[in-house]
Image (cartoon, rainbow, N blue to C red; front, side, top):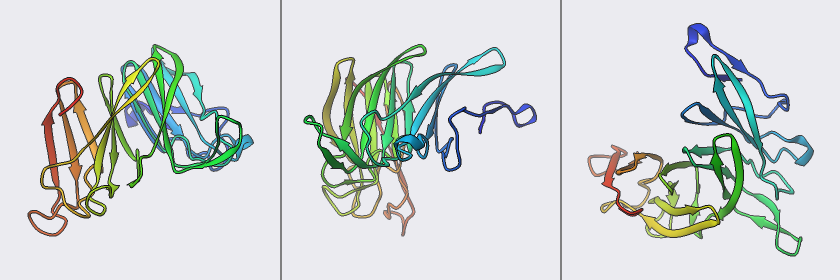
Length: 231
């Protein structure tokens, strides 16, 4: 069930594929007249691998325009656990599961983000990005800054234990470029940098709610200018 207007005039949207455990509304993103809705327990024919749906607002109604699936899932991957959307791009997190390699053999995946291009209501798969080593909770927070996908990883331990990081990807119509990761200058162990993200073309803000610079779990937010895809 999706509420897409004021509570006094609430509209309920139910997808025809919904079933007990679908979890529709686990994740939401809005861009213009479009809403992207994650349902990580959907698609029972593929062991509840998950789906996402793109809706468009037309007048006073919301119409389903596209059903988005992980495509390569064999076992539950919880596709739709988190979503992000801009005017041109869509990103959907699948927490993990078993996928097929290039030879068709099943392999275990620790979690990945599926990236799609979007032209109005047309959605086309671009690539998928697997969680880097040490990037626990990869993709539990995401946002687009133009053609840049920013991925929060609050338990990233590639530096200090559970310090967190934000991984950066340049999205193109034919693929995704890994630009590495960023972290606040004074971020330390268990600060959970990357728990929340917000931004626009010129800046990015990153939350670290467990930062203790001003007392235990006092928290902090880093804001940085953004130019040519890097801070």
